Image (cartoon, rainbow, N blue to C red; front, side, top):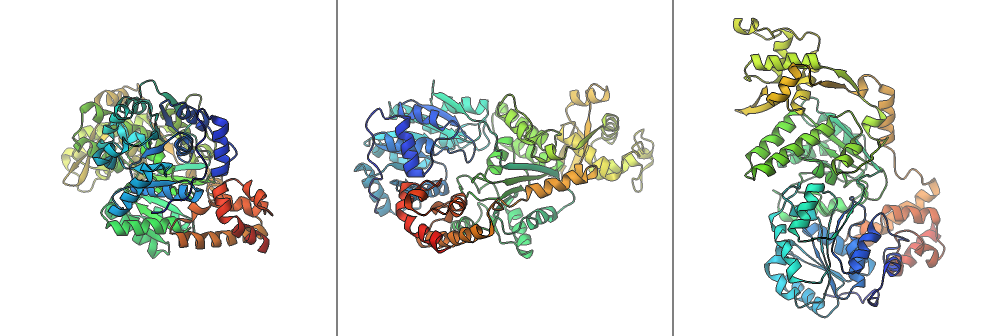
Length: 620
């Protein structure tokens, strides 16, 4: 193994934020810190612990990478996935930072060389998975000088979170094994309960807490109820966004395979990804997705964490996730470069029933199970709600004074809400009279008086035929609404979802008129012009600001970047982001000094690529 020479000497003790900003400018090519980065870095430089919740794409890694370059010793980063570690190490190496990872993919010789480099002080950052850290690495690490310990994706430590991993629980031991070494827990999603659990489990005590706004102004969110069966709507959404990089999440392995196949039949370059695939197949498909600009990854939740591809232009949930935390993590994988990206979710009553059953079948503490069920309810309340989606998410995470975003589907084309309380009373009464023995279709037929071969008993029920004010689709929508609100519940019986009454107190409140039921009317039904404007706005091209001549240079730079990335075996965005290439095309720098002033061009990349980039600018 060979490592580059140090990019810079370790600063003297007591170096502060001014020195940190200089490193940010020199190494990363950025003029100043964003958001709460400076405060977190200041805590690390002072040798104090911290907990930081920063949005996806908000620069969490810089919060521990820069202090690792400044404090004596090697920065230790605990990360949950090999793909995440590989991506960060590749990006740091491009910057000239001496970084390495220890994981199960390495040969014994490679592992030995990395340990030797660490022991000789030739590493700035060392990445390990929690399993590798707790099983064999601790003894050797205690012989090293450790600059700091960063625990990435720290929400994985909490049983209240959406991605709990038992192996993370053991990381609390690091407090006693490395006394005096500052520890930083970072994540993109953690509500107040999860943050408290992270703090307690990792023994962070009185560590400073930094919680940034969860607003992502470049994300355009929308959601719509599923209509009919199959993948037709997903195919329509992807077809409307040609030649763009996207992620489509499906709820099952089989679902990813079938949906990817359907997309390929329509000419989309789609790949399926799930945990059941051969390890090498997953590796190859991941790298194809990272390397190409127009691939669509159809995946289960086994895909995504740690994938830093910056130009994902849309994330479609063909099946919804299980919580708002998971939702925000997954839609947050779009638009990491700051350009517009979409998060589109398709959902239905059967999805919430499936999520509830899955939680109900798992073995967990009753209190934890109750919290997880409540999280499912909150998610569907947001998806099927009437008010701004990003605002609902931000309030969920504890933000105050939140205003409507003005860009999501519910802000651009607000749905109408009609009072359906009386109709809800009829539907609840019909379910009660039918004894929970039937599904949605039969209940609808019963209310409309259209049940085929109706029995004499059913025909005499007081609820038979009392619902002629709604169409079939109207009653189906209302029953879905009652399922979302927990007033009705679906119980599986031989694979057929049978519908019964939900929470007795809530049902009684509706009967008495003490609780109102509002039924939303989709904007397409009453405001087609605004819906059309929304579609046009959300589909805009983030590169539209480039003129024809500059576009030619931009494409030439992307072609050169592709060749360089292929030669080095790294994704193109590791060399330069599209945003950086766009700024180069617009600025057309004539010297290394001018090129170095472009955002994203640090000294390491200027030394490595400056001459080639300047030649391309001159020739185009």
